[in-house]
Length: 483
Image 1 (cartoon, rainbow, N blue to C red):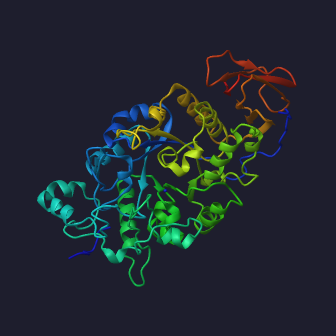
Image 2: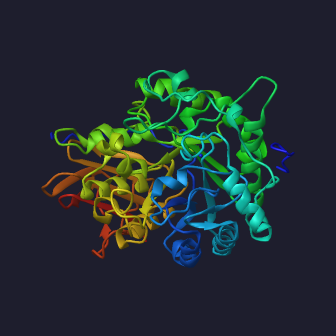
């Protein structure tokens, strides 16, 4: 029977800003490593090193059944064939569970990339999943597939044609109804990804499958969920398949790509309704802040534009923000490559999101193995980012400063400087010349006390007078902490 009952995301102007920027909510305590296209076995092997680098969670490959081919192109992991089974280029359920256990032993949480908006573009546009060939594969080795099963009865199918919207590509991303009901398509005559119907009168089969899937992952020990393609689903549907128990005990964040913050058309169309209609436990990638960062680091734009991003509508409130410098979509999808930062600017931007009090920082590391352009893009630029010495030093500073509010003391065309109460100081210089920043130190820092730069082995600095001049080399950041 097709549907058997299932068991169930420069003019340097010194600015003394008296408003503390932590007025929203406390920042999340841990940095997320996006182990993009890392195998589950690789994450297991590196678990101790991941913990030692200071990460609190790892976002891993979508745990579902997706195509396994010789090339294993990254996008195949985002084309589900079956929610009920984990089997993909990066592992199966057995290796997934082993990974959860390995991370748990070193105090690191597992986050899952949840891809439930659509199914795979395969078999000449079929809308029957997983298809007879896969069902035959299940039947030929039932013991193996039982070990890879998450939920449900693998003797029958999961979805058929009645579970999908009409096969129409999205052509106008400014039309919300079209974005929710249409297919994500490539160029030319690409038929696109079959888009699941979120609700059908008298039939919540699709929503129930999503709910069973997420619940099963939670029961296995997953404690965070990235909701892929969230703008393509109604907010009520997301709320349905992530029940309160899960929302209140995990970190949920949606992938909703926008070109700006408050006032931006895409923000108003997709991100603002998501934030307004869903509880505060539902967070999102902070694309408003990422766009502001990109602008502020551009030639001719002042860095001071990101001194107060929340106040200007260019950042999400702290408790609902996952802050990023890049995501996998940016280098691997042409429409978003405009957000790629210069490599040095990217380092400075990481110092910015790691040094500020706001949101949960995420670090993108590219583990793809397919040949370019379907893997190892831009000469492998984002491979090995996760444990670079500079990155680990920034994470160390971030972890030291959790729960400590910030105050911006200086902002101009080239530089920013803020304090983390009396415990830390962050300075960033995006320009090509060294800069000196003089600030009032009264009641702001520990006097006659050493501050060590987290990013270098430079000698500590000490503040001994009512003003102090911080020196910041060209194109560098400094992250001092009170020893």
